[in-house]
Picture 1 (spheres, rainbow, N blue to C red):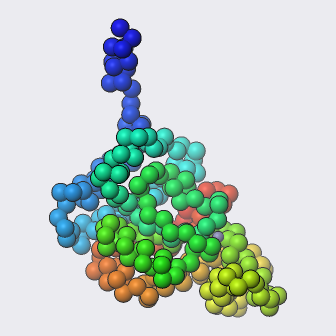
Picture 2: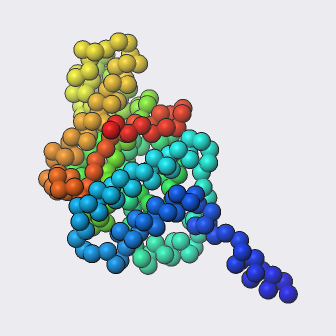
Picture 3: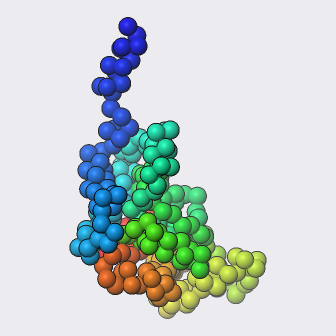
Length: 248
Ligand SMILES: [Zn+2]
């Protein structure tokens, strides 16, 4: 009797997937249709633009749930892991983010296993390996959206501003990060209205610089963006409010 009750309950209780917000399920369904196994190998530009728009909407909706404390339960159980293992990953966005422990992409976008392809470094910078990772994501995984995600109070930017102001050096590997961000400090120094302004402006300038660097240094990304298969956006995360603001 108890067994039958359990079986009956298992059919009536919502699964983790069903407990997701209706919007998330709806958009995921739409995207899966577009990027599923039945999708043609070469999808149309219109489809890709739609997918990039939908992908950004997924991020924006997830971030809204996060900052409003309405996060949905994540399916990280055995069945989900098995599905991802056998069917492969189909992430819908590349996030180039900072290593800062307060800016975890899966958390701030309220997402789970297999949803986003994340590349992180102090200062959300890219090098050859990061560029190769982005190219892998758009070529092999058909990801339609790249987001360069900086944030308020970035320690890498702060270290660069400090080194610039004090004309001081840093340890050999940290100095590589500082030298990469330094041109952004130099560009905004003329508009300085106090340290906070310099910091904030440099953070935003650095995000824009990384977007431009991805497009300049990767002809593959530039081609995909040029023909509408991929969209690239900069965005900034606000530590206290939890909001991710897209630049356009
Ligand atoms: Zn940072």
